[in-house]
Length: 148
Image (spheres, rainbow, N blue to C red):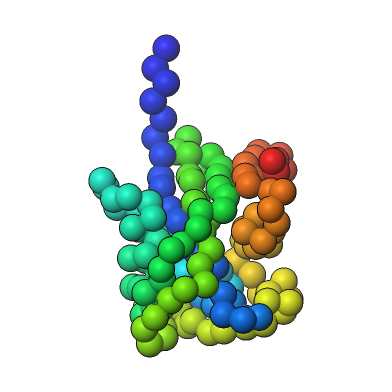
């Protein structure tokens, strides 16, 4: 039995400063709304290196010591398994700027769930900010989230 699966690896990071978090108002035909900076892991790239690179590309910030805090995944309609490795960071340098991915801005942490969130971002926020949750598998057929 072949155990190989086709997968897509991505990563996302919640960056905090005091009681604010950095959000990206993503502009895309397939995925839009308030999200965290992140993107695809390139071939042969270490996932932690990917999140540092993606955050810099989308925000201008250089994050230091990102901490992996969870995983969000699902199966696409073509059978591809899609993984989002979730990180958080509160050490960074650089000058904040938006990119072609969308506008970046700081918001108060307690206001996050009141924003117009991209699909799945409430769950992502909960995984990153709740120590008792580390993984969520989204079943697209039943539209059920299985949280561990």
